[in-house]
Image: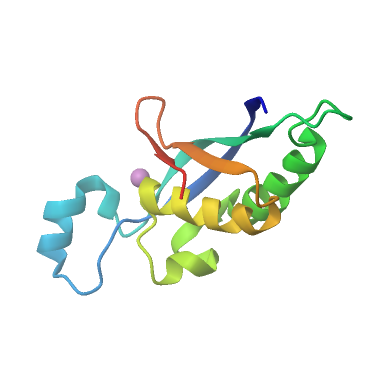
Length: 136
Ligand code: NI
């Protein structure tokens, strides 16, 4: 069976602060630098969701891209766009919203809604040059 990867891009703009409440202000500054700004700062995040699986012989699809688009909108864009990630997204109330952790949270939000035989990889760009990948 041939397998192929279908990808959908999305973007969201969000604010965050990298901070560990268990540490002193000095240690937070030393580890997180400008990302520890108490007044937060923003990024234009770019997301690529890649779904890998067989091509259905009847439809010719691996996954209906309309379904994938709607899923990303509901679970990621509506939840994250123009939000303060630390304060307004449940997962980040107790988890530092680094690019790494944001990618894992996105993966965990999407995975339950995909068929078991499909693979899922999330690529998240925090800046045009800094990006992370997570595939479970
Ligand atoms: Ni940042």
